[in-house]
Length: 327
Image (cartoon, rainbow, N blue to C red; front, top):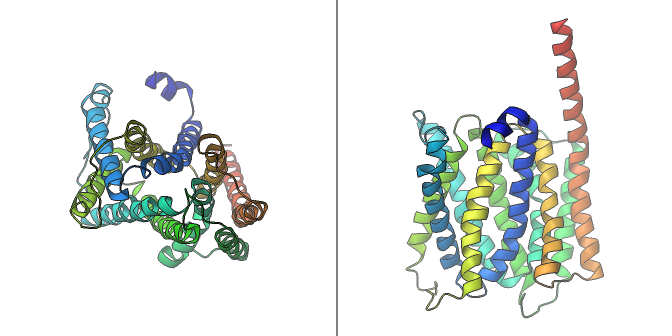
């Protein structure tokens, strides 16, 4: 099956499908998180998520990948600079990202958290400007301001409910998680052309497991005395499906998919999360929250529209140049 796909499906199509699969899994993660934290402490939940992810990765390595003659986990010597990026990447996500997001899901709804994360592509642009010296277009800054206003409006218009007792605080924690995610994307882009997706994903899970293992003895962490079926299955889904599979898919796709197209796919996360929140958790947004969500989404689209156009023109120019050279 794998050889058929490799021989008959182009790399760009495979990368696009992989990216869509990662987005679908990330969208569903908010639903699974909400179910998991209903019975477990966020730190216990994330530890279980990291453990199941790492076990699944090792099983895949021993069985499927060995038979498929996949590249070794360490197929070459990793440089000290690459290890620094790997550690920083893992500290951003899963470590601090999951700390903020785990507690955010106690205080806000999955739908609102998904809309906050909609601004992630803009945060990535700002992080690239600060860390890599990339200069974003004025349109990006206008979109960024619109998205920030939308997030503030969304949070201010939220009312406390039994499932979301403090949505303003929860959305603030989700913003912090989003900033960690933006730094993760920048680090992943630096590593994607040098290290295999298997290595990056495995080290993320291993460092995350050790990080949350150190947090479990803290007095503030409530250890479980029972394991309800649905929340336990949600943790396993988060570990195997979301943490392991989505990161493998994303790290594979980011090698071949342009940055603007990656951002366009990420825009699907809040839309899919809203839909799943309505279907599985019976969540609803008020008219004002819908307007705020539209402002966030509009700001993101505005910021990326010109970038996507420029990239398409650049790709067309490059193709034309290659054709002329061949003639």
